Image (cartoon, rainbow, N blue to C red; front, top):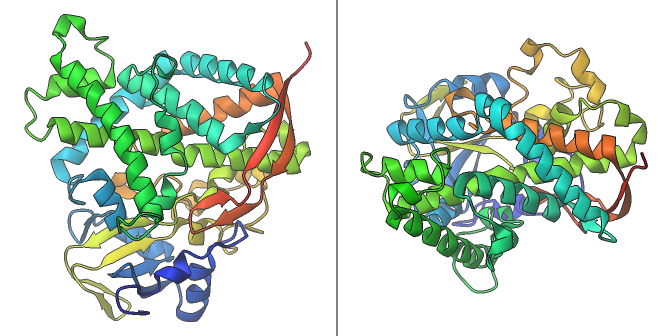
Length: 409
Protein backbone atom coordinates (compact mmCIF):
# COMPACT_ATOMS: atom_id res chain seq x y z
CA UNK A 1 0.00 0.00 0.00
CA UNK A 2 3.07 2.27 -0.04
CA UNK A 3 3.74 5.32 2.15
CA UNK A 4 1.19 7.06 4.39
CA UNK A 5 -0.96 9.51 2.39
CA UNK A 6 1.26 9.22 -0.69
CA UNK A 7 0.68 5.51 -1.08
CA UNK A 8 2.27 4.44 -4.37
CA UNK A 9 1.25 7.58 -6.25
CA UNK A 10 4.77 8.67 -7.21
CA UNK A 11 5.36 5.38 -9.03
CA UNK A 12 2.17 5.95 -11.05
CA UNK A 13 3.26 9.45 -12.09
CA UNK A 14 6.63 8.35 -13.49
CA UNK A 15 6.91 9.06 -17.23
CA UNK A 16 7.34 5.88 -19.28
CA UNK A 17 8.83 6.26 -22.75
CA UNK A 18 6.67 3.64 -24.40
CA UNK A 19 3.17 3.02 -25.77
CA UNK A 20 3.09 -0.14 -23.64
CA UNK A 21 1.12 -0.57 -20.41
CA UNK A 22 2.51 1.85 -17.82
CA UNK A 23 5.19 0.13 -15.66
CA UNK A 24 3.19 0.86 -12.50
CA UNK A 25 0.47 -1.52 -13.72
CA UNK A 26 2.67 -3.95 -15.65
CA UNK A 27 5.11 -4.63 -12.80
CA UNK A 28 2.35 -5.20 -10.27
CA UNK A 29 0.33 -7.37 -12.64
CA UNK A 30 3.43 -9.55 -13.07
CA UNK A 31 3.91 -9.75 -9.31
CA UNK A 32 0.32 -10.05 -8.04
CA UNK A 33 -1.85 -10.97 -11.02
CA UNK A 34 -4.59 -9.01 -12.79
CA UNK A 35 -6.35 -7.91 -9.57
CA UNK A 36 -4.40 -6.14 -6.83
CA UNK A 37 -4.73 -3.39 -4.23
CA UNK A 38 -2.76 -0.20 -3.78
CA UNK A 39 -3.10 3.31 -2.39
CA UNK A 40 -3.15 6.40 -4.60
CA UNK A 41 -3.26 9.95 -3.23
CA UNK A 42 -4.62 8.72 0.11
CA UNK A 43 -7.27 6.45 -1.44
CA UNK A 44 -7.41 2.67 -1.03
CA UNK A 45 -8.01 1.32 -4.51
CA UNK A 46 -8.18 -2.01 -6.32
CA UNK A 47 -6.65 -2.16 -9.80
CA UNK A 48 -8.32 -4.56 -12.23
CA UNK A 49 -6.88 -5.93 -15.45
CA UNK A 50 -9.16 -8.96 -15.28
CA UNK A 51 -11.62 -8.95 -18.23
CA UNK A 52 -14.12 -11.25 -16.52
CA UNK A 53 -14.16 -9.21 -13.31
CA UNK A 54 -14.44 -5.98 -15.30
CA UNK A 55 -17.42 -7.36 -17.21
CA UNK A 56 -19.06 -8.34 -13.92
CA UNK A 57 -18.26 -4.96 -12.39
CA UNK A 58 -19.90 -2.95 -15.16
CA UNK A 59 -23.08 -4.96 -14.69
CA UNK A 60 -23.23 -3.96 -11.01
CA UNK A 61 -23.80 -0.24 -11.49
CA UNK A 62 -26.03 0.97 -8.66
CA UNK A 63 -25.90 -2.45 -6.96
CA UNK A 64 -22.31 -3.00 -5.82
CA UNK A 65 -20.57 0.04 -7.32
CA UNK A 66 -21.25 3.61 -8.40
CA UNK A 67 -19.45 6.03 -10.69
CA UNK A 68 -16.55 7.80 -9.03
CA UNK A 69 -13.96 10.32 -10.14
CA UNK A 70 -10.57 11.16 -8.71
CA UNK A 71 -10.60 13.80 -5.99
CA UNK A 72 -8.73 16.17 -8.31
CA UNK A 73 -11.42 15.81 -11.00
CA UNK A 74 -14.24 16.23 -8.48
CA UNK A 75 -12.65 19.39 -7.09
CA UNK A 76 -12.10 20.82 -10.55
CA UNK A 77 -15.75 20.25 -11.42
CA UNK A 78 -16.77 21.40 -7.94
CA UNK A 79 -19.23 18.55 -7.61
CA UNK A 80 -19.86 15.53 -5.45
CA UNK A 81 -18.50 12.52 -7.31
CA UNK A 82 -21.91 10.85 -7.06
CA UNK A 83 -23.62 13.74 -8.84
CA UNK A 84 -23.67 11.83 -12.11
CA UNK A 85 -25.66 8.98 -10.59
CA UNK A 86 -29.22 7.95 -11.27
CA UNK A 87 -31.63 10.46 -12.70
CA UNK A 88 -29.05 13.18 -13.38
CA UNK A 89 -26.89 10.77 -15.37
CA UNK A 90 -29.88 9.63 -17.43
CA UNK A 91 -30.85 13.23 -18.16
CA UNK A 92 -27.32 14.19 -19.27
CA UNK A 93 -26.89 11.05 -21.35
CA UNK A 94 -30.17 11.70 -23.14
CA UNK A 95 -29.16 15.32 -23.75
CA UNK A 96 -25.78 14.34 -25.22
CA UNK A 97 -27.28 11.62 -27.43
CA UNK A 98 -29.94 14.04 -28.64
CA UNK A 99 -27.29 16.50 -29.82
CA UNK A 100 -24.38 14.20 -30.74
CA UNK A 101 -26.03 10.80 -31.34
CA UNK A 102 -26.39 8.75 -34.52
CA UNK A 103 -29.48 10.51 -35.90
CA UNK A 104 -28.02 13.99 -35.41
CA UNK A 105 -24.76 12.83 -36.97
CA UNK A 106 -26.54 11.50 -40.05
CA UNK A 107 -28.87 14.42 -40.61
CA UNK A 108 -26.85 17.44 -39.46
CA UNK A 109 -23.31 16.97 -38.19
CA UNK A 110 -21.61 14.99 -40.97
CA UNK A 111 -21.50 17.82 -43.54
CA UNK A 112 -20.73 20.38 -40.82
CA UNK A 113 -17.81 18.27 -39.58
CA UNK A 114 -16.38 17.86 -43.06
CA UNK A 115 -16.58 21.60 -43.73
CA UNK A 116 -14.94 22.45 -40.40
CA UNK A 117 -12.12 19.95 -40.94
CA UNK A 118 -11.49 21.15 -44.50
CA UNK A 119 -11.38 24.73 -43.30
CA UNK A 120 -8.89 23.92 -40.54
CA UNK A 121 -6.64 21.90 -42.84
CA UNK A 122 -6.63 24.80 -45.30
CA UNK A 123 -5.34 26.99 -42.48
CA UNK A 124 -2.65 24.42 -41.66
CA UNK A 125 -1.42 24.48 -45.27
CA UNK A 126 -0.59 28.17 -44.82
CA UNK A 127 1.58 27.48 -41.76
CA UNK A 128 5.19 26.22 -41.95
CA UNK A 129 4.44 23.61 -39.30
CA UNK A 130 1.65 22.54 -36.96
CA UNK A 131 1.78 21.21 -33.39
CA UNK A 132 -0.63 18.42 -34.19
CA UNK A 133 -2.17 17.43 -30.86
CA UNK A 134 -2.78 21.01 -29.70
CA UNK A 135 -4.11 22.22 -33.04
CA UNK A 136 -6.39 19.19 -33.42
CA UNK A 137 -7.71 19.76 -29.89
CA UNK A 138 -8.45 23.41 -30.74
CA UNK A 139 -10.29 22.37 -33.92
CA UNK A 140 -12.46 19.82 -32.09
CA UNK A 141 -13.15 22.21 -29.24
CA UNK A 142 -14.25 25.01 -31.53
CA UNK A 143 -16.63 22.73 -33.43
CA UNK A 144 -18.11 21.26 -30.25
CA UNK A 145 -18.41 24.64 -28.51
CA UNK A 146 -20.15 26.13 -31.52
CA UNK A 147 -22.60 23.22 -31.66
CA UNK A 148 -23.26 23.30 -27.92
CA UNK A 149 -23.07 26.99 -27.04
CA UNK A 150 -23.03 28.80 -30.38
CA UNK A 151 -19.62 30.00 -29.18
CA UNK A 152 -17.59 31.66 -31.93
CA UNK A 153 -13.92 31.94 -30.93
CA UNK A 154 -13.09 34.24 -33.84
CA UNK A 155 -15.45 36.82 -32.30
CA UNK A 156 -14.14 36.36 -28.77
CA UNK A 157 -10.94 37.45 -27.05
CA UNK A 158 -11.16 34.45 -24.72
CA UNK A 159 -8.84 31.56 -25.62
CA UNK A 160 -10.79 28.68 -24.08
CA UNK A 161 -9.13 26.00 -26.18
CA UNK A 162 -5.63 27.01 -25.08
CA UNK A 163 -6.66 26.98 -21.43
CA UNK A 164 -8.05 23.46 -21.78
CA UNK A 165 -5.07 22.08 -23.69
CA UNK A 166 -3.23 19.23 -21.90
CA UNK A 167 -5.75 19.45 -19.06
CA UNK A 168 -5.38 15.79 -18.12
CA UNK A 169 -1.99 16.42 -16.53
CA UNK A 170 -3.74 18.26 -13.70
CA UNK A 171 -6.33 15.53 -13.26
CA UNK A 172 -3.58 13.02 -12.51
CA UNK A 173 -2.02 15.24 -9.85
CA UNK A 174 -2.55 15.55 -6.11
CA UNK A 175 -5.54 17.87 -5.50
CA UNK A 176 -3.32 20.38 -3.64
CA UNK A 177 -3.79 24.03 -4.56
CA UNK A 178 -0.20 25.20 -4.17
CA UNK A 179 1.46 27.51 -6.74
CA UNK A 180 3.77 25.61 -9.06
CA UNK A 181 1.90 22.29 -8.88
CA UNK A 182 0.16 20.72 -11.88
CA UNK A 183 -3.16 20.83 -10.06
CA UNK A 184 -2.75 24.55 -9.29
CA UNK A 185 -2.00 25.35 -12.95
CA UNK A 186 -4.93 23.20 -14.00
CA UNK A 187 -7.22 24.98 -11.53
CA UNK A 188 -6.20 28.45 -12.75
CA UNK A 189 -6.87 27.50 -16.37
CA UNK A 190 -10.18 25.95 -15.41
CA UNK A 191 -11.27 29.13 -13.64
CA UNK A 192 -10.73 31.17 -16.82
CA UNK A 193 -12.82 28.73 -18.85
CA UNK A 194 -15.57 28.59 -16.21
CA UNK A 195 -15.84 32.40 -16.27
CA UNK A 196 -16.43 32.38 -20.02
CA UNK A 197 -18.98 29.55 -19.91
CA UNK A 198 -20.76 31.06 -16.90
CA UNK A 199 -21.12 34.34 -18.78
CA UNK A 200 -22.62 32.51 -21.78
CA UNK A 201 -25.06 30.64 -19.53
CA UNK A 202 -26.12 33.86 -17.79
CA UNK A 203 -26.63 35.67 -21.08
CA UNK A 204 -28.79 32.85 -22.38
CA UNK A 205 -30.81 32.73 -19.14
CA UNK A 206 -31.49 36.46 -19.39
CA UNK A 207 -32.47 36.38 -23.04
CA UNK A 208 -36.10 36.02 -24.02
CA UNK A 209 -37.29 32.86 -25.72
CA UNK A 210 -37.54 34.67 -29.03
CA UNK A 211 -33.93 35.83 -28.75
CA UNK A 212 -32.53 32.34 -28.27
CA UNK A 213 -30.32 31.14 -31.08
CA UNK A 214 -32.10 27.91 -31.98
CA UNK A 215 -34.02 25.10 -30.37
CA UNK A 216 -31.26 22.68 -31.37
CA UNK A 217 -28.62 24.53 -29.37
CA UNK A 218 -27.41 22.41 -26.43
CA UNK A 219 -27.37 25.38 -24.05
CA UNK A 220 -30.86 26.46 -25.11
CA UNK A 221 -32.15 23.04 -24.11
CA UNK A 222 -30.48 23.25 -20.69
CA UNK A 223 -31.88 26.76 -20.06
CA UNK A 224 -35.33 25.56 -21.10
CA UNK A 225 -35.09 22.56 -18.76
CA UNK A 226 -34.08 24.77 -15.83
CA UNK A 227 -37.78 25.56 -15.48
CA UNK A 228 -38.61 21.95 -14.58
CA UNK A 229 -35.37 20.32 -13.37
CA UNK A 230 -34.41 21.48 -9.87
CA UNK A 231 -30.81 20.20 -10.12
CA UNK A 232 -30.13 22.44 -13.15
CA UNK A 233 -28.77 25.49 -11.37
CA UNK A 234 -26.57 28.00 -13.17
CA UNK A 235 -23.46 26.65 -11.40
CA UNK A 236 -24.31 23.02 -12.13
CA UNK A 237 -25.02 23.77 -15.80
CA UNK A 238 -21.76 25.69 -16.13
CA UNK A 239 -19.65 22.86 -14.73
CA UNK A 240 -21.48 20.19 -16.72
CA UNK A 241 -20.83 22.14 -19.93
CA UNK A 242 -17.19 22.47 -18.91
CA UNK A 243 -16.93 18.72 -18.33
CA UNK A 244 -18.57 17.80 -21.64
CA UNK A 245 -16.38 20.22 -23.59
CA UNK A 246 -13.29 18.75 -21.92
CA UNK A 247 -14.39 15.20 -22.71
CA UNK A 248 -15.15 16.11 -26.32
CA UNK A 249 -11.61 16.84 -27.42
CA UNK A 250 -8.86 15.84 -24.98
CA UNK A 251 -8.81 12.10 -25.69
CA UNK A 252 -9.92 12.35 -29.34
CA UNK A 253 -7.14 14.80 -30.26
CA UNK A 254 -4.51 12.50 -28.71
CA UNK A 255 -5.90 9.50 -30.59
CA UNK A 256 -5.89 11.37 -33.92
CA UNK A 257 -2.31 12.51 -33.32
CA UNK A 258 -1.30 8.93 -32.52
CA UNK A 259 -2.97 7.62 -35.70
CA UNK A 260 -1.11 10.17 -37.84
CA UNK A 261 2.15 9.37 -36.05
CA UNK A 262 1.78 5.69 -36.99
CA UNK A 263 0.66 6.48 -40.53
CA UNK A 264 3.75 8.69 -40.86
CA UNK A 265 5.94 5.82 -39.69
CA UNK A 266 4.13 3.26 -41.91
CA UNK A 267 2.99 5.06 -45.10
CA UNK A 268 2.02 1.74 -46.75
CA UNK A 269 -0.93 1.61 -44.35
CA UNK A 270 -2.44 4.75 -45.88
CA UNK A 271 -4.45 2.50 -48.15
CA UNK A 272 -6.17 1.04 -45.08
CA UNK A 273 -8.44 3.73 -43.74
CA UNK A 274 -9.92 1.33 -41.17
CA UNK A 275 -7.51 2.65 -38.53
CA UNK A 276 -9.95 3.98 -35.95
CA UNK A 277 -10.27 0.92 -33.70
CA UNK A 278 -6.54 0.21 -33.90
CA UNK A 279 -5.71 3.79 -32.89
CA UNK A 280 -8.20 3.64 -30.02
CA UNK A 281 -6.80 0.27 -28.91
CA UNK A 282 -3.26 1.60 -28.70
CA UNK A 283 -4.06 5.06 -27.35
CA UNK A 284 -5.71 4.33 -23.99
CA UNK A 285 -5.39 8.07 -23.30
CA UNK A 286 -6.79 8.01 -19.75
CA UNK A 287 -5.14 5.48 -17.41
CA UNK A 288 -8.32 3.98 -15.99
CA UNK A 289 -12.09 3.87 -15.46
CA UNK A 290 -13.11 4.42 -11.84
CA UNK A 291 -15.91 3.08 -9.66
CA UNK A 292 -16.57 3.30 -5.90
CA UNK A 293 -17.68 0.24 -3.95
CA UNK A 294 -21.05 0.78 -2.22
CA UNK A 295 -21.39 -2.79 -0.93
CA UNK A 296 -18.67 -5.32 -0.07
CA UNK A 297 -17.60 -7.29 -3.17
CA UNK A 298 -16.46 -10.91 -2.77
CA UNK A 299 -13.98 -12.05 -5.40
CA UNK A 300 -11.48 -14.93 -5.50
CA UNK A 301 -11.72 -15.44 -1.74
CA UNK A 302 -11.07 -11.78 -0.96
CA UNK A 303 -13.34 -8.87 -0.01
CA UNK A 304 -13.18 -5.43 -1.61
CA UNK A 305 -14.63 -3.29 1.22
CA UNK A 306 -17.37 -0.72 0.87
CA UNK A 307 -15.86 2.73 0.36
CA UNK A 308 -12.83 1.52 -1.60
CA UNK A 309 -12.33 2.53 -5.22
CA UNK A 310 -11.76 0.24 -8.20
CA UNK A 311 -9.79 1.25 -11.28
CA UNK A 312 -10.30 -0.75 -14.46
CA UNK A 313 -7.22 -0.37 -16.70
CA UNK A 314 -8.18 -0.52 -20.41
CA UNK A 315 -4.53 -0.59 -21.52
CA UNK A 316 -3.97 -3.83 -19.65
CA UNK A 317 -6.73 -5.41 -21.74
CA UNK A 318 -6.15 -3.72 -25.09
CA UNK A 319 -2.37 -4.32 -25.01
CA UNK A 320 -2.70 -7.88 -23.73
CA UNK A 321 -0.80 -10.32 -26.02
CA UNK A 322 -3.28 -13.06 -25.16
CA UNK A 323 -6.08 -10.99 -26.65
CA UNK A 324 -4.19 -9.15 -29.44
CA UNK A 325 -1.22 -10.72 -31.20
CA UNK A 326 1.89 -8.52 -31.12
CA UNK A 327 -0.13 -5.85 -29.24
CA UNK A 328 2.35 -2.94 -29.52
CA UNK A 329 2.35 -3.10 -33.33
CA UNK A 330 0.09 -0.73 -35.23
CA UNK A 331 -1.79 -3.21 -37.41
CA UNK A 332 -5.22 -2.04 -38.64
CA UNK A 333 -5.71 -5.26 -40.63
CA UNK A 334 -6.04 -7.26 -37.40
CA UNK A 335 -9.63 -6.01 -37.12
CA UNK A 336 -10.68 -7.88 -40.26
CA UNK A 337 -10.48 -11.19 -38.44
CA UNK A 338 -11.51 -10.23 -34.91
CA UNK A 339 -15.04 -11.22 -33.95
CA UNK A 340 -17.24 -9.36 -31.50
CA UNK A 341 -16.81 -12.11 -28.89
CA UNK A 342 -13.05 -11.61 -28.81
CA UNK A 343 -13.35 -7.87 -28.22
CA UNK A 344 -16.39 -7.88 -25.90
CA UNK A 345 -14.24 -7.99 -22.74
CA UNK A 346 -10.90 -6.78 -24.11
CA UNK A 347 -11.77 -3.56 -25.94
CA UNK A 348 -13.31 -0.71 -23.97
CA UNK A 349 -12.20 2.50 -25.62
CA UNK A 350 -15.46 4.15 -24.53
CA UNK A 351 -16.05 2.48 -21.16
CA UNK A 352 -18.38 -0.37 -20.34
CA UNK A 353 -21.83 -1.33 -19.08
CA UNK A 354 -24.55 1.31 -19.02
CA UNK A 355 -21.93 4.03 -18.55
CA UNK A 356 -20.42 3.79 -22.02
CA UNK A 357 -19.57 7.19 -23.43
CA UNK A 358 -22.63 8.88 -24.89
CA UNK A 359 -20.37 10.65 -27.37
CA UNK A 360 -18.72 7.47 -28.67
CA UNK A 361 -20.28 7.57 -32.14
CA UNK A 362 -19.53 11.28 -32.51
CA UNK A 363 -15.89 10.66 -31.55
CA UNK A 364 -15.47 7.78 -34.01
CA UNK A 365 -17.13 9.66 -36.85
CA UNK A 366 -15.03 12.76 -36.17
CA UNK A 367 -11.81 10.73 -36.28
CA UNK A 368 -12.90 8.90 -39.43
CA UNK A 369 -13.82 12.10 -41.31
CA UNK A 370 -10.63 13.85 -40.24
CA UNK A 371 -8.41 11.01 -41.45
CA UNK A 372 -10.44 10.61 -44.66
CA UNK A 373 -10.17 14.31 -45.57
CA UNK A 374 -6.48 14.45 -44.60
CA UNK A 375 -5.49 11.36 -46.60
CA UNK A 376 -7.57 12.06 -49.72
CA UNK A 377 -7.01 15.82 -50.11
CA UNK A 378 -3.70 16.53 -48.36
CA UNK A 379 -0.29 15.11 -47.69
CA UNK A 380 1.88 15.75 -44.68
CA UNK A 381 5.45 15.45 -43.51
CA UNK A 382 6.64 14.72 -40.01
CA UNK A 383 8.86 17.58 -38.87
CA UNK A 384 9.88 16.73 -35.32
CA UNK A 385 8.81 14.97 -32.14
CA UNK A 386 6.34 12.12 -32.02
CA UNK A 387 7.92 10.17 -29.17
CA UNK A 388 5.02 8.57 -27.27
CA UNK A 389 5.04 8.52 -23.46
CA UNK A 390 2.67 7.53 -20.67
CA UNK A 391 2.76 9.63 -17.51
CA UNK A 392 0.39 7.75 -16.97
CA UNK A 393 -1.84 9.57 -19.51
CA UNK A 394 -0.84 9.33 -23.18
CA UNK A 395 1.28 12.16 -24.51
CA UNK A 396 4.19 13.15 -26.72
CA UNK A 397 7.39 13.89 -24.80
CA UNK A 398 8.58 16.61 -27.17
CA UNK A 399 5.35 17.31 -29.02
CA UNK A 400 4.53 16.14 -32.53
CA UNK A 401 4.93 18.66 -35.34
CA UNK A 402 3.97 18.18 -39.00
CA UNK A 403 3.75 20.30 -42.13
CA UNK A 404 0.65 19.97 -44.32
CA UNK A 405 0.45 20.39 -48.09
CA UNK A 406 -2.55 20.27 -50.38
CA UNK A 407 -2.50 17.50 -52.98
CA UNK A 408 -2.31 18.65 -56.58
CA UNK A 409 -5.52 18.01 -58.56
